[in-house]
Image (cartoon, rainbow, N blue to C red; front, top):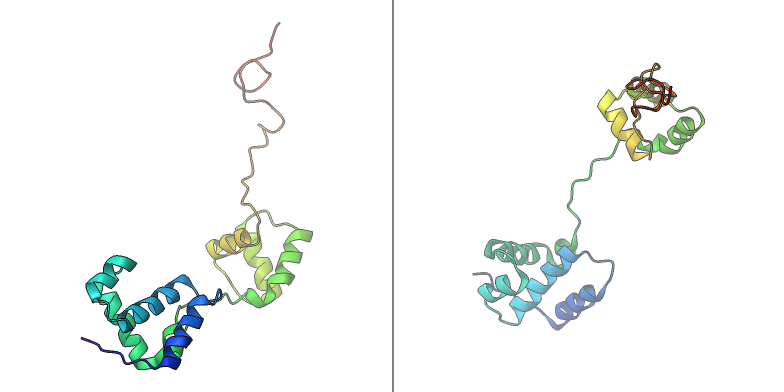
Length: 161
């Protein structure tokens, strides 16, 4: 069993961090685990109150014992970044001025502007991230005609004669 000995300064730092609105909910949960442990709450009680697994409580306490408050609040999430992100404003302007018809054209334009070659699916995802909608071209024979029967469309004939 892990036993943490916290100083008055540690307790006040934890209380201050709990009141900070910039701290994520996950980190606040970690701090609550540490605070409840310091108040001699049993692990079973902590798991029930905070709806955590007992291993999670132990991991939070180990994390605090190894790295202190800074180690507990450290952001360790992996967030990959796109290689075309530095060119985002330029690409968005280019697509707004002259929209592309499909993903193949987007791949060619992105490569010509940035030097980065994307696959078609990556280009679609990138364009969707810019707020562009994927549209499909309709058959030219259907353009301008109604699809409802009896209204001059392809399913019905002329109405009334």
